[in-house]
Length: 535
Image 1 (cartoon, helix red, strand yellow):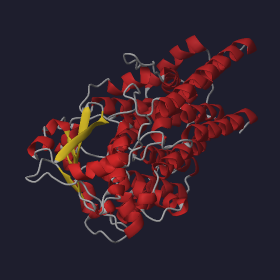
Image 2 (cartoon, rainbow, N blue to C red):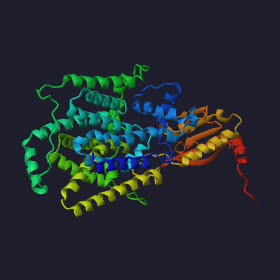
Image 3 (spheres, rainbow, N blue to C red):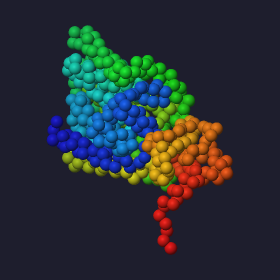
Image 4 (cartoon, one colour):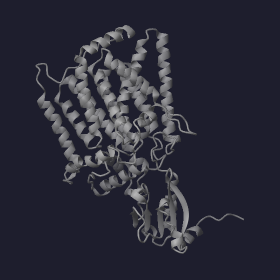
């Protein structure tokens, strides 16, 4: 590694930490984060975790969060801060930069340096590194699998086969969508083999050289077969064994949940229905690319990671058509296949784009290096370098704006079904009511909304010992404190002859409102504690 590449890597790590660590509580928990918070608290406090195949993901995020909970100091979940929960995704987001070193001899250190910078400042990478969901661990374990696979191809050492198998097992134990990534890897490997052997490749290279001139020749990596033509069955067996062991350990909750492995396979039945269109998260094929390429809401700022996409296009072109290593060619096919797969699947949530964005960033590193090396004169190279640095700084500014200025704003392309900060005022009011109630946090509270559409309230109201959550209006909806979705038309004040009062309307998510009903006598006690205006 030369000095410039080392400097780029250090700058990337510094930028990654600066954009990911501060003010991790800048927005309230998303409903998915709150569900994960409840499950990890159960694991942390009681040592219990059981994988649920319906609507939930794998266990690695929860187990990876435990060390941060042990070191943070809280004694129970009531003292647990949102920022502490988000430290594990930060760790994986920063660690993703270090994993780039596994690809250095295949892509070249300059390309790795640029990829590190793009990873550090990509608005999507930064925003979801501060998000307590499974996506960043999945991308990290994917990078580990790809990197270990490349190291094995270069060295033929069994330890890299074991690491690659472990990576696959961790991907499986993180999120069900790992099968899409694994399929893209397999198809890309097949396509790379066909492409590198075909006459079409030689013709395409010849045409490229007439435009760009002779390209640098990087010796291809060896095929899967050994020099004697045999397949490395022993190493493949070790990789498979490592994957199976990791899969069993995590899904059995380290031997305490016997049905976990079967549930990890059974989960694909409901997930296939969602992918096929049976979900509220159905979006057109262009959903991801619109957020990455150009997103400009009304009365909001413009967002674009077009620099990464444009450079990735350059990187993919030279990787397939130029005389590059098989790693270049594989990454190009892999990224194109994975991007296409996610665009074709109807079920879409914006954080899923991280899986193929990681590949785009690797190719963007290749593209940036290609552009700089294309020009022979120093002045031209300096101009291209300065332009790339300026545009990369603009990405960093967008990342800061997304995470610190618009973290919960619908005008942020990555804030999807995000909890509105106004909800925390409702939680504060409930806490104030508990302080004046004789029963304190033993006071009964009912939260009512259709289809579990009340999260993250169960997490934020976790101090209340008698909290009941309902998916529809129960026969007896009354409790000293009742929080009910406005679309249920509860009208508890009218139905109780004004023994309950509707004290406010709060927004849970954009367009989703909650009504707060309080028993009249309790509300009077609360009002008496409010500061009086001076005459």
